[in-house]
Length: 156
Image (tube, rainbow, N blue to C red; front, side, top):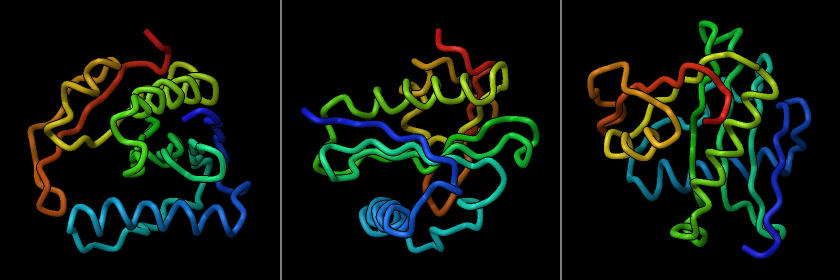
């Protein structure tokens, strides 16, 4: 990860190749690796002020998440589709991705609460970033999840 670069792009800034690349990686991780057949493209990628946070190692997309527009999500920024490409796992990139995401939220939507639907086994991981469980565990595509909220977007 010597040449890691970050890009947080409003959906209107995505070119076709970047959009294709991020959708392909999301499908690889969430549909293929997790053996979870579902329609990964959910109609929320290109609406409102939705932004896409990308981590690149050279030209390779190695980390990604999506920030959904709080105006469309009940007044909260919703972080979703959080992933690290297989070749970058175990490098600490996930932590850097979350730190970068919270910094972007704070800059773009200061003082706005942040919500995410975490895979239940990652509750402690997200807890390190100030997220607290606000729902019971529920199944989403046969995978246990839990809703978590962070009161504000400022880094602690």
